[in-house]
Amino acid sequence: MAGSVNKVILIGNLGRDPEVRRFANGGQVVSFSVATTESWRDKATGERKDKTEWHNIQIFDEQLGKVAEQYLKKGSKVYLQGALQTREYTDKDNNQRKTTEIVLQRFNSELVMLDGRREGAGGADDGGYSSGGGGGGFGRTSPMEKRPAAGGGGGGRAPAPIDDDIPF
Image (cartoon, rainbow, N blue to C red; front, side, top):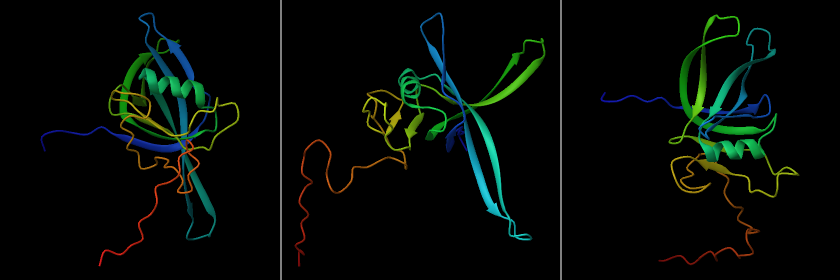
Protein backbone atom coordinates (compact mmCIF):
# COMPACT_ATOMS: atom_id res chain seq x y z
CA MET A 1 0.00 0.00 0.00
CA ALA A 2 1.42 3.35 -1.03
CA GLY A 3 -0.11 5.54 1.66
CA SER A 4 -1.92 5.49 4.95
CA VAL A 5 -5.09 6.93 6.46
CA ASN A 6 -5.63 8.69 9.78
CA LYS A 7 -9.37 9.39 9.96
CA VAL A 8 -11.68 9.37 12.97
CA ILE A 9 -15.47 9.64 12.80
CA LEU A 10 -17.48 10.14 15.99
CA ILE A 11 -21.12 10.70 16.82
CA GLY A 12 -21.66 11.68 20.42
CA ASN A 13 -22.62 14.32 22.96
CA LEU A 14 -20.51 17.19 24.29
CA GLY A 15 -19.42 16.64 27.87
CA ARG A 16 -18.67 20.33 28.44
CA ASP A 17 -19.09 23.70 26.74
CA PRO A 18 -16.44 24.51 24.13
CA GLU A 19 -13.46 26.44 25.50
CA VAL A 20 -11.61 28.89 23.22
CA ARG A 21 -7.91 29.71 23.63
CA ARG A 22 -6.41 32.42 21.43
CA PHE A 23 -2.75 32.56 20.41
CA ALA A 24 -0.50 35.61 20.12
CA ASN A 25 -0.25 35.06 16.33
CA GLY A 26 -4.04 35.47 15.96
CA GLY A 27 -4.85 31.75 15.72
CA GLN A 28 -7.13 29.88 18.08
CA VAL A 29 -8.03 26.41 19.29
CA VAL A 30 -11.48 25.32 20.46
CA SER A 31 -11.49 22.41 22.92
CA PHE A 32 -14.23 20.20 24.32
CA SER A 33 -14.91 16.56 25.14
CA VAL A 34 -17.35 14.19 23.44
CA ALA A 35 -18.86 11.06 24.96
CA THR A 36 -19.71 8.01 22.85
CA THR A 37 -21.70 5.22 24.48
CA GLU A 38 -21.93 1.58 23.43
CA SER A 39 -24.96 -0.34 24.75
CA TRP A 40 -25.64 -4.07 24.80
CA ARG A 41 -27.65 -6.69 26.65
CA ASP A 42 -25.68 -9.24 28.71
CA LYS A 43 -26.52 -12.72 27.35
CA ALA A 44 -26.12 -14.42 30.72
CA THR A 45 -28.21 -12.06 32.86
CA GLY A 46 -30.29 -10.20 30.28
CA GLU A 47 -29.15 -6.99 31.97
CA ARG A 48 -28.58 -3.88 29.86
CA LYS A 49 -24.98 -2.61 29.99
CA ASP A 50 -23.36 0.60 28.79
CA LYS A 51 -19.77 1.60 28.19
CA THR A 52 -18.93 5.28 27.69
CA GLU A 53 -15.70 6.52 26.11
CA TRP A 54 -14.57 10.14 26.41
CA HIS A 55 -12.74 11.81 23.53
CA ASN A 56 -10.83 15.11 23.73
CA ILE A 57 -11.52 17.30 20.68
CA GLN A 58 -9.29 20.13 19.43
CA ILE A 59 -10.49 22.36 16.57
CA PHE A 60 -7.79 24.45 14.85
CA ASP A 61 -9.88 25.41 11.79
CA GLU A 62 -11.15 28.98 12.23
CA GLN A 63 -14.58 28.46 10.64
CA LEU A 64 -15.33 25.17 12.41
CA GLY A 65 -14.11 26.73 15.66
CA LYS A 66 -16.45 29.69 15.21
CA VAL A 67 -19.43 27.34 14.70
CA ALA A 68 -18.49 25.28 17.77
CA GLU A 69 -18.01 28.40 19.89
CA GLN A 70 -21.34 29.97 18.88
CA TYR A 71 -23.72 27.01 18.65
CA LEU A 72 -22.44 24.03 20.65
CA LYS A 73 -23.19 23.59 24.35
CA LYS A 74 -22.79 20.80 26.88
CA GLY A 75 -25.08 17.94 25.79
CA SER A 76 -25.17 18.91 22.07
CA LYS A 77 -25.17 15.91 19.73
CA VAL A 78 -22.52 16.16 16.99
CA TYR A 79 -20.96 14.26 14.11
CA LEU A 80 -17.20 14.89 13.94
CA GLN A 81 -14.61 13.86 11.41
CA GLY A 82 -10.94 14.52 12.10
CA ALA A 83 -7.59 12.85 12.72
CA LEU A 84 -6.06 11.08 15.71
CA GLN A 85 -3.07 12.89 17.17
CA THR A 86 -0.86 12.11 20.18
CA ARG A 87 1.27 14.79 21.81
CA GLU A 88 3.59 15.01 24.78
CA TYR A 89 3.61 17.79 27.35
CA THR A 90 4.93 18.61 30.82
CA ASP A 91 2.27 19.07 33.51
CA LYS A 92 2.33 21.62 36.35
CA ASP A 93 4.21 19.13 38.59
CA ASN A 94 6.93 18.81 35.91
CA ASN A 95 5.88 15.26 34.90
CA GLN A 96 6.03 14.13 31.27
CA ARG A 97 2.55 13.23 29.99
CA LYS A 98 1.02 11.97 26.75
CA THR A 99 -2.46 12.66 25.49
CA THR A 100 -4.36 11.44 22.44
CA GLU A 101 -6.88 13.80 20.85
CA ILE A 102 -9.18 14.05 17.87
CA VAL A 103 -7.96 17.06 15.88
CA LEU A 104 -10.02 18.97 13.33
CA GLN A 105 -7.65 21.01 11.17
CA ARG A 106 -8.08 23.10 8.09
CA PHE A 107 -8.54 20.25 5.61
CA ASN A 108 -10.45 16.96 5.73
CA SER A 109 -12.37 17.83 8.88
CA GLU A 110 -16.08 18.04 9.43
CA LEU A 111 -18.53 19.13 12.11
CA VAL A 112 -22.27 18.47 11.85
CA MET A 113 -24.74 19.57 14.52
CA LEU A 114 -27.28 16.76 14.93
CA ASP A 115 -29.63 18.43 17.44
CA GLY A 116 -32.75 20.24 16.35
CA ARG A 117 -32.90 24.00 16.49
CA ARG A 118 -32.50 25.46 19.93
CA GLU A 119 -33.89 28.75 21.11
CA GLY A 120 -31.26 31.45 21.38
CA ALA A 121 -29.19 29.97 18.58
CA GLY A 122 -29.62 33.12 16.53
CA GLY A 123 -31.82 31.42 13.95
CA ALA A 124 -28.88 29.59 12.46
CA ASP A 125 -29.71 26.69 10.23
CA ASP A 126 -28.71 23.34 11.64
CA GLY A 127 -26.36 21.42 9.47
CA GLY A 128 -22.80 20.63 8.72
CA TYR A 129 -19.64 22.52 8.12
CA SER A 130 -16.60 21.18 6.34
CA SER A 131 -13.11 22.54 6.24
CA GLY A 132 -11.12 22.64 3.07
CA GLY A 133 -11.97 26.01 1.55
CA GLY A 134 -15.11 27.86 0.65
CA GLY A 135 -17.97 28.92 2.86
CA GLY A 136 -19.69 27.28 5.78
CA GLY A 137 -21.56 24.47 4.02
CA PHE A 138 -19.17 24.02 1.10
CA GLY A 139 -18.23 20.44 0.39
CA ARG A 140 -20.65 19.00 2.92
CA THR A 141 -20.65 15.28 2.27
CA SER A 142 -21.51 13.84 5.65
CA PRO A 143 -23.77 10.80 5.77
CA MET A 144 -25.55 12.63 8.59
CA GLU A 145 -26.26 15.65 6.36
CA LYS A 146 -29.65 17.21 6.98
CA ARG A 147 -31.69 17.42 3.81
CA PRO A 148 -34.71 19.68 3.26
CA ALA A 149 -38.11 18.10 3.87
CA ALA A 150 -40.18 17.14 0.82
CA GLY A 151 -43.03 19.39 1.98
CA GLY A 152 -41.09 22.57 1.23
CA GLY A 153 -40.89 25.21 3.91
CA GLY A 154 -37.49 26.41 2.80
CA GLY A 155 -37.08 29.93 1.45
CA GLY A 156 -40.65 30.29 0.17
CA ARG A 157 -40.02 28.18 -2.92
CA ALA A 158 -42.48 25.49 -3.90
CA PRO A 159 -41.03 22.01 -4.40
CA ALA A 160 -40.46 20.92 -7.99
CA PRO A 161 -43.41 19.00 -9.46
CA ILE A 162 -43.00 15.23 -9.68
CA ASP A 163 -43.32 13.73 -13.15
CA ASP A 164 -45.61 10.72 -12.69
CA ASP A 165 -45.84 9.82 -16.39
CA ILE A 166 -44.49 6.40 -17.24
CA PRO A 167 -42.27 6.72 -20.34
CA PHE A 168 -43.55 3.52 -22.03
